[in-house]
Each structure stands twice: as C-alpha cells, then as structure tokens.
Image 1: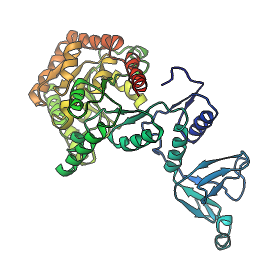
Image 2 (image 1 turned 180 degrees about the vertical axis):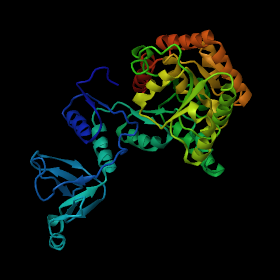
Image 3 (image 1 turned 30 degrees about the vertical axis):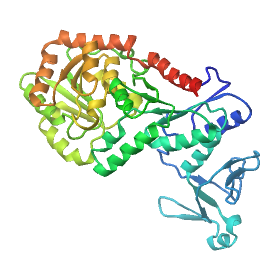
Image 4 (image 1 turned 60 degrees about the horizontal axis):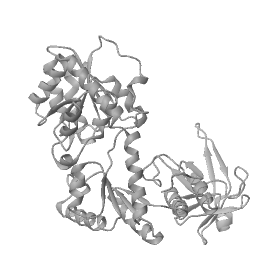
Length: 433
C-alpha cells in the first residue's frame, strides 16, 4: 500500500470510478475513497435510465452497444463496459398533475426501427458500477480488502487473477450471527464455508481478543486486532454548549429496538424510579416490525417520560449521545454476545457518557479497565434498577465515570491512533506477499 499518491479520488460513483480508472491507465498511483462498504450497492432511488438516446443530452449523444457490451460517448471519445441487461423504451409520456398528457414519439413507428428507434433504455446501475470498479482495480491495486464473509469469494477470485493479497476484515462471527434466524443445517454449511475460505486469505483483521481466539481455531494465517474506535473529530462533546444544571436526567439507548435487549426491564425499572424522581428515557433507532406493537404498548403508561426518535444518519449520532446522561448498553445475552466489544461503548466514552452495560464479550474488561460505568450480570429488572438508581443518586460517581471514559477516548480508544495499526496490517500483508 502506497504512502503517497499522485491522485486521490473521493467518491466511487460512475464519475469517480472513471477518474480512478483513467488515471490508473495513465500510470498514476491512485487512492479511491468511498464511504460505503459495498461500493456497487445502490441505496437510493435512481431511474437507471440512459436519457435521449435519439438526440443530445448535455451535449453528448449516449449510445448503447449491446453487441460490444459498451456504453458509448462519441463526442467525448470514450466508452465504458456494461455487461448487464437493458430494457428499450420507444416513446415517452409526460403527465401533469391535472391528468394532461404529452406524448413524445410514436411507439409503433419507433418500435419498427429497432435500436435506431428507441427513445431511451433502462439499465442496471449496480452491474455498471461493478464493471467500472473491476477496470479501476486492474490498475495499481495493492491489496483486496474483503469486509464480511459474503465478499470473500469474489475477493479471493480477483486476488488469484491479479496475483494480489487478500485481507479478510472479520468484525462478526458470521455463523453464530445467522444462527438466530436460520436452520442448523444452513449454519453448519456456513461454518464450513467460513473455515474453508479463511484458510485461503493472506491475513485476517478482527476487532478483539475473543474474535482472534475464535479464528485461531480455524486458520493459522496471521490475525491482527484493530478495534472499531470512533473518530474524535466526529465524537467531540466539547463542540456542544454546556447542559443546563437543573435538567431532567436522561437514560438513553441507540440502536435497533427489539426483544431480548433489556428494553422491557428498563421500562419497568423507570416506572419504579418515577415514583421517586423525574427521569427521561430516550430511544434512537429503528423498531423491529414484529416488536413495534409491543414496544408502543410498553411505553404508553410513561409516554410523557419517553422520547422516541427513528434511526438517524451516523453523522447525527453524537448529537443524541450528548443529550444523554447515562447510556444503556444492554444486549441479548445469547448468539454473538460472547464475542462482542460494542462500538457503542467506545462512542459513549468519546462523548463522556457513562454506561450501564450487559456483561457480554469484552465489555466488562473495558468498562472496569477505564472505570467508565457499571456492568450487570444479566438483564434482570432488579439489577437494571439498582444500577440506574446508583447513577441517579450518586451524581459525583456518574460524572467521574463520564470523565474517565472521555480521558481514555482522548488518549487511547480513538480511531486517530488505531488507524495506524490498521494501515500496518495492509503494509505487512503486502511485504509478506
């Protein structure tokens, strides 16, 4: 992996991929930066339509050549690969809100002309992006970075074709994760696939010691721990104005709202606490469809003391941490719980928010090491209630927990420091290949 680049392209859409591809073809060392983990996924509404094939659009006449499997831009003098399907359209109809219609072109007449008569065509943008990405990666690719198990097969195939190393970024124990919703036979098959593929990668990056020990039983390949710590430029409580001294204490949770996450027990504890002191519950996240009715029924008796916010963009998450006095880091005690070190713990620490946490994975180790909250053995109502009352009636302890977490985030548990280890994983992989 290069330490210096001739060109950095930010954004791996069609234009960014074309820029990276063209620069690579001309001998430049290019870094392509994209915020999405899966570059070719389309996560927004898109017509996926080539406009005005019969005329000019923004000074260009875009041509679809299905025989050569290319999209051609004759005026600008280039073409791009497209291996996917398309649907021809031979006329346009535009409707006003009052129902008036403007017809552009005659369908029967244009249909008889075949390709020459089509007004436009709809294509598959994901396939287009995959083709551009493949061409971009064929120039100056140092290493293939495969995030999650479902990317390993294409990553390994590409690495063998281009003779490049593969880093498997394994953040979750995939077979255990899917065991909640899939049959035992499918989980067994997935476990076999994971074991097989992990023996063919060059190195594995994972997020904690528990996951490292898990993969050591599968493969002898190098395994490196790089934690998922937050970036301090995003999680910075100092950029907010101070809180009012007499505000109501807020207990909060960020993440999916579903059964088995200590939510019912937390609400029951809050009902008991409200008999003594006024507090507020803040939930931020999507409610699982099958749990929606139960959740609404649950909070109805205390609705004046509960605020619910649907899932928000990641960039807005720190705003909600700042509103919380205590973060409820409660997890299902089954499934993948024995392997996790929750990123929300490190987010809370970076925002100076103390936690009440379930005793899962490495959570206890971190909370006790940095003295940033309380850990409960299970999600029982009495244990949650006792922890919440400790936070309420011991404000100095609560503040100290928050300060300890913030201090640790500034010195240790931040991405600004951890990313040095992340880059070293790739550099070591390249040197060893």
